[in-house]
Length: 271
Image (cartoon, rainbow, N blue to C red; front, side):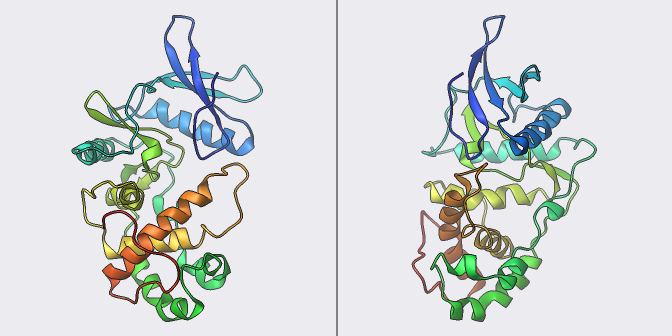
């Protein structure tokens, strides 16, 4: 089984099944990735749609379980984003949000709370990134926190909560979404809004406007995390959080009408 990319320590590769079909195999390598993999497998047994790959199997014969999914290695994995790709993703999200949610899901607002409270309690991780000064943060933290509180996460729709290009591919004229361990109940707007910073960072064209309250929420989420120590079980996460923070921070400042960051951040992509 060859190893493929990803932001966590889970193993990834292609295997050949006994009937000759190829399958994508995602294996747990520690307790945390096993917890995520079991959550993902549960979702694959509960929901189905053209927006997700087919579940082919679940193997617990080894020390750690392995999830077997439809092979999408021949699909196109952006970036680059081509004209119309963003609309295909939005169509997949629309189908996803119309799919009945299985019982037992957590709520989006429970999984992701207002992170500006964490920044206020300990601003050093954010300030260590040198994107803003302490004076800038003192002047604008209250405005960002207040706007973030207006972001609506609560809802009864099935949401993915981790829409980024590494979890999206284009196959046979439709977008497909992978990595389902964060799926929850929430407001349908959440998935598209949370997707926008990474999309713009990669040169894509936003299919919807970023709303000021979600922009503030996203800045708080990344500001509270990007400066923390690397996660051993997900070593690539901090770098992508920082890249998205650099993209959305000046964007949010413009939307909220506050002073631009006074550190070394700057706009990335087309906003």
